[in-house]
Image 1 (spheres, rainbow, N blue to C red):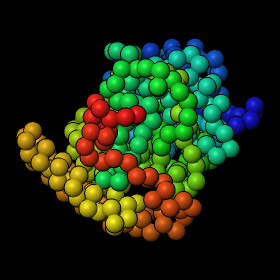
Image 2 (cartoon, rainbow, N blue to C red):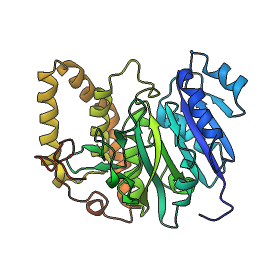
Image 3 (cartoon, helix red, strand yellow):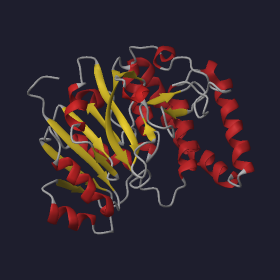
Length: 320
């Protein structure tokens, strides 16, 4: 983007008071100072609002209740007219050149920039170096759980960005309708990455570090993470996947069902599947609109990738 680009940082917040000092210290240290910082608070009850008022000059949008990640970031993105928007979770601390390097990668066809997220407790372990969506419905986090190494220091195009620490071209996000608020939390950034790809936007990976405490700001106190992922996977598939991929999706769904039964989570898992049902009609309506508006075929937007065996994501032997 040009030299006159305006940059906003949007922070979705829910009971993340203990993380806020570290996050804001890292924001103040940025080599590229953001034009504004907007915190969208999802009804925090831990003193977050009081701390923000006393310790920062951030603009705070208090929603008064836990509306979920997607609603919060949509409100933040709508509240600014900046050209670039950095989304940063409360439980993240940024390298001092994080914003400058990530914003610089927003070239003409680049709609989002993924960065190298590492674990706060062990910065030598990668948390996420760009997301990937497979044709069985599984979303992989590139490098997750692996020791950091030179291969994660190579910039280049990746499939999509984790919204826990990423930069977006605001016009691109608004152009595809923003984050899907049906998701509440988890996979909403994968859904957005897919819609950006279908609209012809690319995602770039810039290996600048964001340290992530992981699950410190997701706002899912009453909803198990596995259940949300199971439910939201069904929504994503209903919205975008062609029928010819249904056997792959069914294979994965059965494998997840068996795993849930082995681990004593069967009731929880079935509850997530049931919870998806009332949302499917609207997802199917969104499917028709997505097909009409896409400029890239879904088979190109989600390229073939191993979905079982040692070459599939999640295995120690899988290639990067």
